[in-house]
Image (cartoon, rainbow, N blue to C red; front, side, top):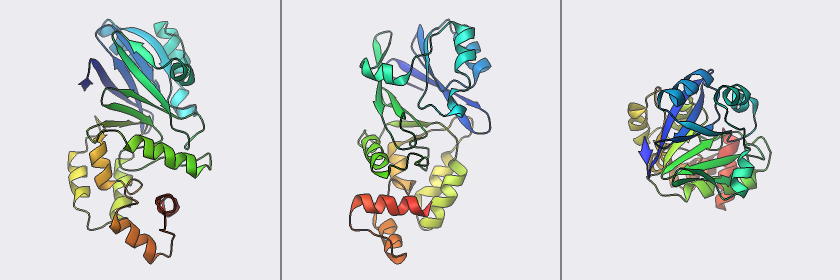
Length: 237
């Protein structure tokens, strides 16, 4: 898919990981580049200059391909925090923005290219990541930051957990008609959703919606503030 001059190519690897190339006519940026062979072949076939190898966060299943991909292409490994401090990463005439989304990990970031959001393990298609830092307040702020983007923003996540996510969503909201539609449009060969989709089906983004709030009240969980509702939904998962 393409937007504002930057295109995104998704590459599955491992059991359910997803890697990405963000690219223009000549330049590319690799994010979580575990699909080393396929990504290298794509770069060469399209005559692209891979300008950097970087990551949404530092967990090993996302960084495992860094050195090999850098060695094969000659691209430098550039930490996302350096890109963020520099105001983003330039690809031709376009800028890939980088912003911090701590919670799943302390170093988690999201990359924005036009309407594309590479969300790593912060926001998945249909669910969210585990809050391994234990800082739910930071994680909540990160989720709110992502959901403030326009509804037509395209979510490209770090793993394909769609089937499991929708099974959980259905347990919480069995009458939600959007879940079936979400699953009908799901394609494992190209996994994505829009932010509007997420607001219709993702329980971790629907904590302010009455069906979820009613469920939390029935379970005796706190619903007095948005943050407490978010925490309560996280506890259910």
